Image 1 (tube, rainbow over the protein chains, first blue to last red):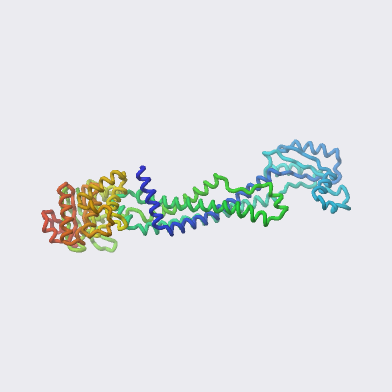
Image 2 (cartoon, rainbow over the protein chains, first blue to last red):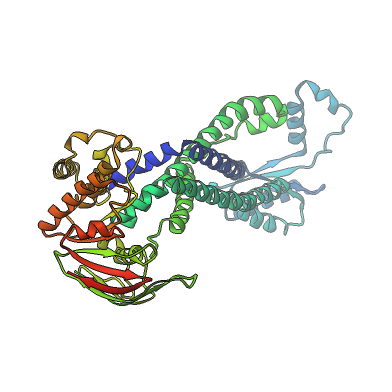
Length: 306
Length: 220
């Protein structure tokens, strides 16, 4: 077994060395295809992260109708506090809201001059328990809040949630549709490269068959070649993506082209690279595709023809 | 050792290469297979090492029914035989030693064993001094000796030779025949296809005649 493995590994590297240019071309094409596929994975992954990070900061703002008396407020607050998943309910009066606006505007607070007090509605700031900071729990709590006639309007950033969910969903579909095409391309290119390799070694393969080499001795080096092409190509793609992610995206695109307000908001949310388990899956996927291409080529061209 | 029973081979182009051939070659026998070009000699040898399947009939080699339905172990059968060709079929980018070692590498032998066997077989064919030389620098006779050495390095009980002296002059032919004769004396079964009637007359071995795919007569 050891001699067999040693032999087939040596043969695989000899095959690749003997057809260096086609192999390098295949590796480059696999690399580019997997880079595109991994980019989609990275974007989808970060969109999901954004969503999770946003969910962590979720607060529901329930704005009260004008004329709700203070005595009703406490009762309402206690009822909302009883909802499953609610951690805390804070009453923000109209004056409190005005003070907050003035602090937020800072030096520009004179913009509020002439605005009568009480124009801003009072509200409840509802903070959810950690396990309930997700879209489904949010929607359930909002439905319960809507039953209170004293509540005018409820805000929880629903447009953002819907947009993010749709965007994430779209990316995932695009990833797999485009990815499917790219992955078929990888199998095709590996198949063609192996066909060239087999063709260039036709005489040697014929002699091996005459000498009684088993099918595995003949075919396995080509499978290994496909695996190596997939491994090297995909690894290069991940390295390239890493470089683009850290060097280009974070330091150039992010800091140069994003507006300050969005930068402030997003600065608390990390833009992550793919985690190790996803990287491993992508690399394994590349290797499997390389293997399929070489397997198909060897099944077609390396059989003992009798 | 070899049994052909009513074997015919008709190619898709409707060319009949062999027609109802029945013959038997015993273990340890040396048989010339002769006939003009196109008589079916190469086709018959190809049937024996399973490069072709007969259209009809039965072929048994070394006790293995190679025409039986489901027979897939072609490579195992080929390990029981050595095959020598007119055009040598050596790897031109390797040395004499590497060409012979190749036969042992692809059949799973350990490096130490390979080294030992290569040395032994080169001694037998008289090429021990040429082990490190590229085959490109060898004469035709020497190349054929390398091919024979490669065919014999796994100690097969059967040797099939398809016009092995076709590209050789008389001196080289004699060298090759000497090796094969010694081999035959050691008990190897040899089937030697040739259209060289002069060569056949020089040796006291059985002759199987083919003409237009049919067996005509044989003599011992």
